[in-house]
Image (cartoon, rainbow over all chains, first blue to last red):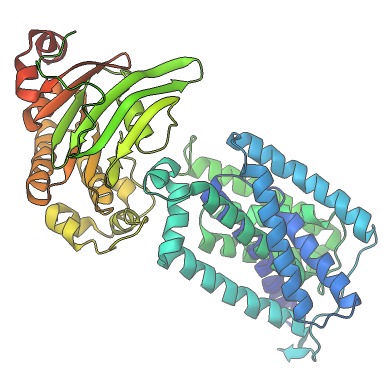
Length: 284
Length: 237
């Protein structure tokens, strides 16, 4: 029972981190129709930059916020590179793959190949049903839930959010209505960068990151986003939780080395299920 | 083809003081293909003008250029007021509700109060929280027109009002456009393949063929013009 609770709670926290990455995928895809393969890079930059700032003596809290801002800026720069020119959708997608590879190279040059981590906010572990849970997990849960509520409200209820959705729904009509579709796309990339950065900032104290850690984060985040057909933020959160909990149970009851394989297997099943559910030719 | 109106205004004359919208020698290219060869039209304040012509003549290209989607290679666009464009194929936001579709029409500014639209098309009232993508073609056309009207335009350009719609639906929507024009004084530029409909509800018309204005004149005159009858009103219907 104790182990079960521990796996469940840590799974929820990790799932919410995946959900943050998934939200980044969904946000960027909804507005630009580009699947941003560099989404995982935002997370590792978020983690690495926080690490360097903390090491330089910047206090907790400030370091994390600065790292998220930096990730947002990286998101904006990636957005400008990927969709700034008049390039076809497929080219934008390939550009994001290139940016992902470039990010790994930069991360390796700057931070090396040894996994890094830092301690989360100080505080005691707490006990639920006999399971010791690090305080960082609680922080992950609270911060992500606040962000999700804000995003769901922002996207679904505000005029600006509706204009963002309109860009994805019908870019031509959005332009006719006076919406600057390109600028909206860049805003989506910036927010996607911030979300990825936040995910990295939150997850690094729980599991050390490496320069190549973006791929597994991005794959799991992408798989979570696929649950909602890349367009539903709510279902992406559900997907993230499913993957996070499944990963922890596989790692706990079976073997940690199988968790990525299980995530990939789940992804394939989901893709097949999506392909059956959504008619070829679009998600409309 | 010759103009049916003896005092047909020349390109420069056509940019009269009372026009809300005019083009002068507008040339638009898609790569090497010239889509519009020096098109000059004008729409006066509160006027209803038709632009008729066959498929591929350049009608939608002209509207997209007026809306800033296409960039002209040369020529001038004069807009003395606000233009709103109801695009071909209606182009609603399929994933958004009717209400949100209408609200976004006011994106450039102005009131987001949608109540006047539901007064204009009461059928939309009960659909306001439905996804626009799930509506019938006629309902979508109403949404598209209302979305354009939310911008509070001085001139509304409607591209292929009748496309894919049942004749009764078309005449209902056309009647609303005429009413709107009479009550609010909103000028209308109606682009149509259905020449009969367009010439019946407008006062003046242009015939566009292969990217050139072939004919222009009063709609009632064009309805009687043998060339127009043969090309657009006879065999087709």
